[in-house]
Picture (tube, rainbow, N blue to C red):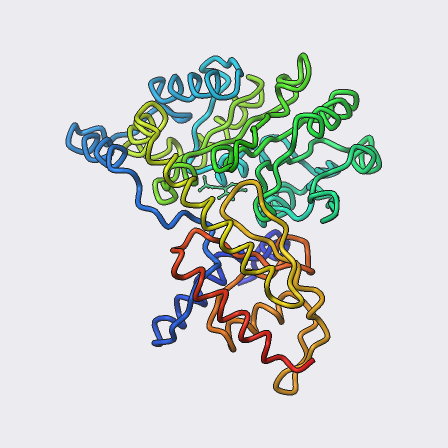
Length: 398
Ligand SMILES: *Cc1c(COP(=O)(O)O)cnc(C)c1O
């Protein structure tokens, strides 16, 4: 059967692919240490699970309003007010089946042929795919490691055209862990407001941030910028709820109404029981997520320090998320077993074959000089896995 052209426009998510390959090797009996997964290794906190169980027992198992229940929208509105000093009404909030779904529906609602959407790289793997599936053009804006992987104002000015519709911002960033400081975001906000483009702010790692580094949202940077911002967030990462599939957006009423309209014809409402669990996540005790962040911080310190002891690898210290994004390009050109490692895919394959360690090649995120390691895994795995990488690299003929 001939498939639609749009299928060939995109690639399947490479992060999910590497996780699947590592899992397949594990099943064959290989002792693989996985740094591929883009999800917390922690269990969903028990108070949240219980809220889900109670929802089932109470028979809260039917369709809800498409964009989420009023009760959940109110919990989200309170969260955005308390954490982000942003005020929204129910008609400015939509709940979807994960932030990925939110961003997909948002792209379908906003973008069309001829539109340009600025995506700073390194980027989350799905952003370009969302834009392409909406028939629009992703404009990749390459950030520099020496700029902390952040967009400089002159760079942003350089890529805005009359066709620019939006920019997708993600701080803390997957994959780099970079967090925008107030002045950095303010400078971008001035340009965005001046050019009347939309800012899509993916805040999914908002709470996974270390050492007291503050989080800022672009919507707060200028008067009226809230009217040009859609805030996207969710519970997957903060509350270890990836399988529950709840994400949400808050923004201008017309945009949110369009997202709800599209959602009404694809999934209808997000899962009713997950909505109940999310209310508990947002309103309940926050000790568990805080403990997770503390654990991520210790793991980050360990993995970054260990990576930097390996000759040929340099790793900047991420300020947030649970990813390390070391530069491995000094090792390109090195040969092994008759082959040559010449890019991040070769490098990741070498590590999987020779070190039994799964990482994601940086090319998946638009940066071929790097690899991504998720440290949402035990300290023991981190120590053992990085030791293995070190040994495998020492074995390379140079
Ligand atoms: C994980 C992730 C998401 C989506 O998470 P959901 O599970 O769909 O809510 C969105 N953006 C980034 C940058 C992510 O890493």
